[in-house]
Length: 163
Image (cartoon, rainbow, N blue to C red):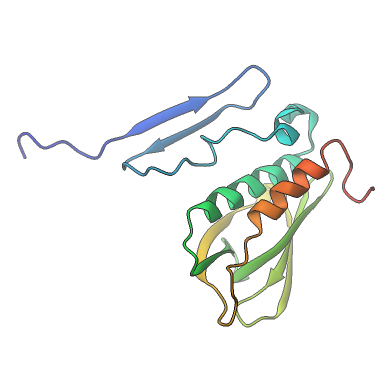
């Protein structure tokens, strides 16, 4: 119709000299910053991507996406991960790891409470983050993003599995 405009599209690109290029395009006035718009923590930014294995680089970015997703949830929901391209279902995330050069692992429980672990090659990595109603009887929602991000900071410069 005359005089009407389509959705507002905003594009921001971030790419400093030693930091990876990032971009996001949005068709809404969503206020919350995305993981692409959030500054990288020093533990991630201090080592250029070309000096990381594909597994380490995927591991670090997935943690940042989980943390950003959780920041947008209300107290009635927790982050869960769905896996595309398979019938693995949904995983309540309790941990994430990697094994150089190319394996990323997710630990947790499925919707029935069964212990679950997914081991995935980085070339096959496709996940969907979902808001899952938190379990009844829990006082607080289970938030893993901040714990995982703290592990990134604590382990900066260390090789996983070494103390």
